[in-house]
Length: 290
Ligand SMILES: Cc1cc2nc3c(=O)[nH]c(=O)nc-3n(C[C@H](O)[C@H](O)[C@H](O)COP(=O)(O)OP(=O)(O)OC[C@H]3O[C@@H](n4cnc5c(N)ncnc54)[C@H](O)[C@@H]3O)c2cc1C
Image (cartoon, rainbow, N blue to C red; front, side):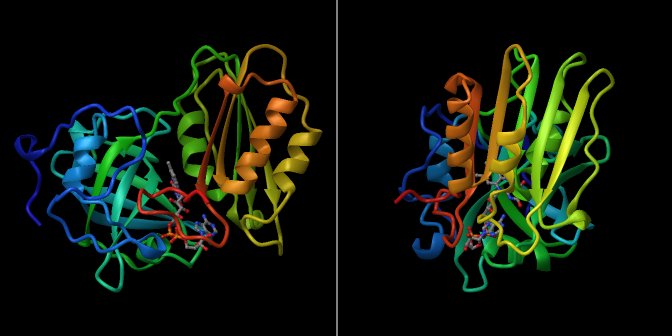
């Protein structure tokens, strides 16, 4: 695949929506949209997503982080042009085994410009084109991605930050905590299968971090109440804080409601469903609505 240069990167026109419309004629290999298969053309997406660029990524390596998470490293000749804020993501065009393309969103975990490496951490849940691709991909494979995307960024005016989510939210939680300002405080409630799925989360000097690892054990992902139970028992710090809630759709919606019920201003609760139990993500890469 030919590398992209600045000349053929596509800058796009602002669009207030974070969702995309059906393909209006862009040339790509998308198929039709059942089971989360993409019916969105690359060029149509690029004309609708503010400040998004098209990236032709080549897999350069991978690391087993935990039994449920694989870090894939990517190279691209123009990586130094990638400008993003911690918390933002890329929309990947994942090739399915049947020739269709599936749009799936994954957080930018870290970017090492001098090293020419972009890292993305994939949950190996085993049951979707994204997870299967992440499990089977090898160095030299190429994949297209569009981004950066995402509007939820660190709230720099908040004195404390509360992160809630399952392992799909671990990359965004870790990336945001690593970027907190000195003097701020972070509490993270993270649901994983078990102790082997825990990861080290580091923070800059002067940031106080308290991570609660919650094990769902034999309960299926998306069905556990460990996050809600832990939140109910947690005393929220005083002062102005901001909560970031990501993961399974119903769980996210329940946690958001609980935080608002506890008195948090809805404007300081950023809740974004990442996936939906038993249902493939929709063609725009997010859980579909009923
Ligand atoms: C902005 C954003 C950022 C995200 N960042 C990341 C990230 O950095 N790393 C990451 O791994 N995911 C991330 N996700 C979540 C990821 O996009 C979804 O999990 C997506 O469903 C994976 O696609 P798939 O093709 O593997 O599964 P799909 O085809 O969407 O779903 C197939 C089946 O798998 C189940 N499923 C999907 N995801 C999970 C899961 N995590 N655990 C258990 N079952 C699941 C579904 O319920 C469904 O039954 C992010 C999502 C968004 C919207």
